[in-house]
Figure 1 (tube, rainbow, N blue to C red):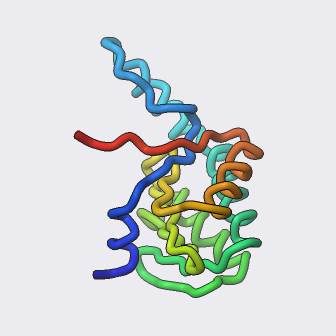
Figure 2: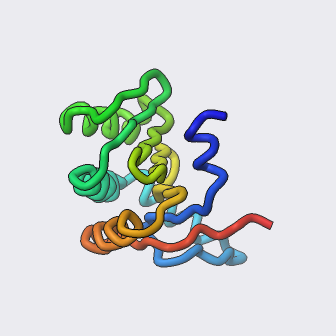
Length: 144
């Protein structure tokens, strides 16, 4: 089994614009709000990039996109990959923190970043960096 598939079976957390999962309302206002943020996402993209780059100062990365895998890319190369994802030129980016087998997943259509299998110091740092960028870090709801 591929390492990313194995990690995705582990506990997940979210780096999100909301502090918790938004409850469904009869008027579906969340979807209107989501459309607004999707059309105006440059600030969110900047914040995610900042979290990812700051965390990179502490951990080695293996970065996987639809067409390539890169071990410890140069900062400029990593930011180009993120920008391509944010523009929709790539559907996703998986970033494996190789020392602790945690993974960050960025998908163009999502207004959150999923984090799998993070614990210990990596989890603490990620939570601190997330808050420093005005985002929220919490355990992802489980389906079922």
